[in-house]
Image 1: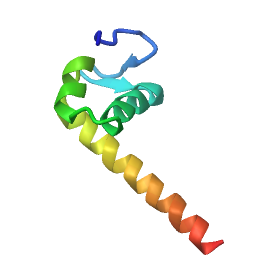
Image 2: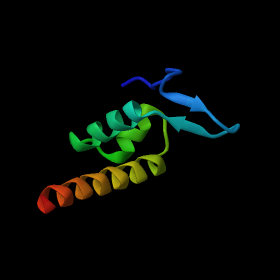
Image 3: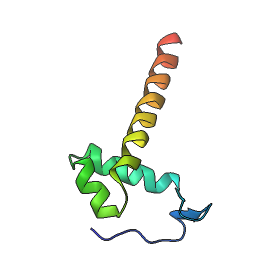
Length: 73
């Protein structure tokens, strides 16, 4: 898989700090959900594994919150 170098995926904030758009994060998480390791996804996308773990945690937290709302209905 090619490194993602699209300007729409990465927005420059402070020098040395990148902000990845939601589509890019979802793409990375989908690759992990499809059975690829966090390491291989990070390598394929040219990012640190340390970025993917919080994205996974946040997605899991959001999913849990949505389940809780449905249960309350």
